[in-house]
Length: 328
Image (tube, rainbow, N blue to C red; front, side, top):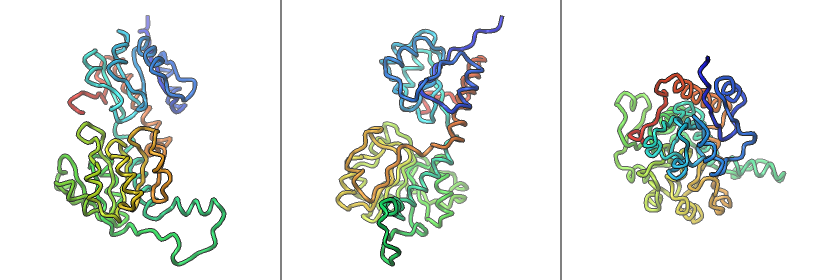
């Protein structure tokens, strides 16, 4: 007799191609709509599944893991970040955790550059004028932004995405600087034309644009706090396509309102989709709904990684994208 197929529960709608392939391989329970599961729904899913496929908006914490059934042996996260999962507790309960790293690098770097251009060249303000239908024609002094070529870009976090941003920035003629937990190898620095700053304080004080590209960990929570934000030049802008928790959002809002920073481009927020309403009132702020990785190609590649992780696990092997606590 053939081996029984794994029961896989998916918490959100995924691209059709991914759902179809998943249905072919496993006994899959798909989400009929795209609303997030409640904690009760998640608990029920974890009691009857061999594999759970959550997304970054599903908080799989210790109390929820305590309700998991004996069958649950793998949490195959649809997302590169795993700060939504208590990995340590999962492993203690014999549950493996996998993620989908590497596939969203280029998409997120593209969005970082889009936000830099949008803020520095005031693109949303121009768009709003056209949508209101009250453009009165070209003027030498209207809608003046700032040139990005020749500007100093400071990248906070020089992993895959940070390096992809650096390559794009160099093509725009920007001067690339970075701060990272570990300095890059000399040949990588040379290839990127990047200058390392051991002191984050000294770097942010001298940058025209600061791009946040580091993960959210206990050590990076509010890394850009009120004190450090005040070190930035009043003419500087900050862009974040990484994790909202890295910036003290209230402090940032106060400084933008007071004119102590020239602008911000934010794709992520400290409290998820609950955004400080005062941010949305500012003309010098561009807000996006966590779109950095939102390409069809990227989502399908994420789904393919999830499939490979589950299939490898089903075959009795270590998932290729296994997350272990020491990595975090």
